[in-house]
Length: 565
Picture (cartoon, rainbow, N blue to C red):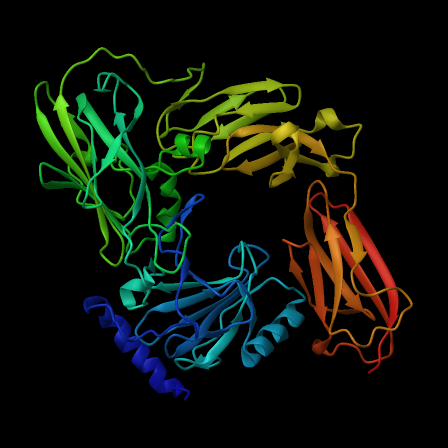
């Protein structure tokens, strides 16, 4: 049943003013799928450079499941992109919340027709639309899409979010989304940190992994550690649920000193604007070296993350000679299954045998100030607040190659890498691009632009960068259609496209001179046109595809095919 537009609008405005003052609704939102909810990813799970903003619901390792609106509302936003959420749908509800459905294969017919009309009008597969409150209204349980694997998805699943009126994602399980979970969180490691030059942990002035012993209750206790000065702890932990083997994020981590809370991570809600600060919540250098994330349980640089609660002394512990401290870490999942780690601490000075390995360079960059590395024909600018804390930064040049920073140091904001182009006057400057150098010096395209005689790259990753040339056009290969052949039984026309160096930037396809919608699956390098779009009006048809890479090389593929109408 559709809501009357005027009543819907009044109800939406009225309830959005007051919902924040009420308890979170438990029966308002239903399930977005018709199958049991099994998660491949939990809310606020630690991902690369961000927190996971929803839950990933397994779709039985396949695409094509019905996706349902979880409450009455209207489709307020539709975004289709090659990356990210792929095909995504946003539904705004009368109580002020918005639900998000990502990695979709396709949309319900009425929504699909609305999207295609706009795609053909704009002649673009990638599109972002904002329907009005009266255009695409939906009711709870109504099918709005079909599950898929579009965008940056690593396998078929449904990404599902609930956002508040300020567009802050919230944990959907707070609203009654039910998941079977009787298993306690797992602990892979606990680490102690000496937080300044005069601190120590059992003879270490750096990070130290603490040996844990399991107890009969399923908790852990560590050996007594001897410390002095300011120290902190970190934990590598994850959650396991009953029906899935994958490791997910936990719901809450709390620490106590002699029974008094001194730090808490509470994964209920966050803002997108703060999400990248995850890189300073974790031990980033450990992650880059071992591909595992230690969540630091101290906040020695005033991390602004709103998930950090109940902070006393920044979560640090100051231990005096002879002092005894009982430190605990309590890790809890959403179903209140918990694991406690007890760490007995005694203040005792010991000879330091392991020191922090700090690579000093001629360049010490202060986080709150911009810094410019300037060479004769190349330079790097790191703006203020790009670093999370002051650090020694490596800067070396060799020919056309710049080595900047250390990959174990995170960047919060983009730095700018400049190469003057006048030295390349004997080359086609339009074919130059900035490349990051990977394993075996393999070049990878980095977003860049040309202006005022400079080639400038913008990036949030330290590493090695150089100027590369791409003179090779993209490749185009037909998959299921051939020149001069009849093509009547197939429902789609498919083409394979690729570019070995700078990458595919854009494409344009026509049949008989009229633009056609070809969906791009970048993971497979496949373009697909669906004949149900009814563009073809004659049996003989001329197909043309132009593909352009990131430096402007282009390839043109043309053929004639025949199809019964």
